[in-house]
Length: 185
Image (cartoon, rainbow, N blue to C red; front, side, top):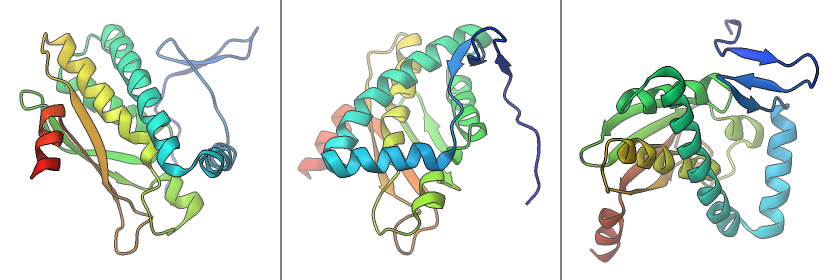
């Protein structure tokens, strides 16, 4: 393993201990602490209900993050999405790779390698990175809205590195109308 210093701009307020990156407050916690808490809530609520809650919360958070980062760095369009994937990757969630993105169509496909969830939980035979799913739709929708588009999206995890026969996670984002059309036929 090759090690490197973090590429994130991290500042710590000497008076409060608050960490910030690009002027956004951050938390720095051990992976096992976060995932153990995640698993405890999943066990209490059930994976399906917890996934619904996290989708909505993640969507809102991604929208906010992309809006603030676009303003902070003067980014637009695909550059905002790529910056988001880079920052997520730099924070230890895993390596997020945009395989395809088409803002005009409202679609993207993201591959997740080195998932923190898979490293902590192992091959459990199911999709376990559902916490990330709303992030992709929230990011896409914020970028689309900033471009003046009314198109809105929905995201789904189609595979996980925690499933047998899979080494990576895959997330697909499509326009909301496409999801309902796919469900009908």
